[in-house]
Amino acid sequence: MKRLIILLILLAGCFGISAQTGLFNLSFAIPIEEADSLLALSDFYTPNINDNLVRYYPENSDSVEAILVFVEPQTRRIIGWFIKYNPENSEEDDAYVLQTLQEMHGKTNHFDEETQQLIWFLSTTRSVHIMYADDNSLTVLYYDSYFRELFHINDKTAPLTDSETENNTIPENSEPSPSSEDAR
Image (cartoon, rainbow, N blue to C red):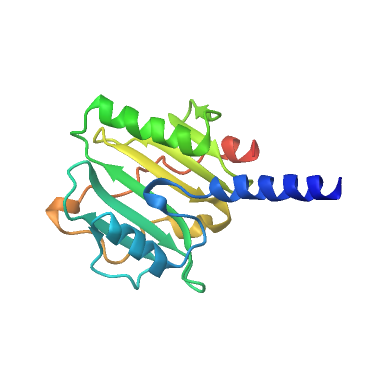
């Protein structure tokens, strides 16, 4: 009987860990160097890995414009990431992303009417948000509310200047609404 209980606890823990891994095989709390290696395997590069907001750009992909990785400054571990897809992607492309998210995080989710976001709650602080940006590009945000203050990119002193990447920002309303967080 004890073995069965221990086995069930271990299985529950494995499911909890797998729910924390998301698109591009990134996971919460992995070191930025590991995230860099994973994204390099998917043909993404960054000009600077030393920032707390690391911007990755595709070498050979037309479907993704950029991936922004948020890093906790003391531990240099991933606290979230943001994926901005190309606004020219087809509805089928966007449907594929949604299907992949459902396969990874389950079909149970929440639609926030106010912000027009589809949200998966992974834990009491971690969530996944999918929505359309103002330029009609699909965006996915892996968010940890414990580190809320580190998710603001508009205050960065080095804004994007390259015309190719000038729209690679988090939409203003991508942060979960207070009512959504209270429901966690």
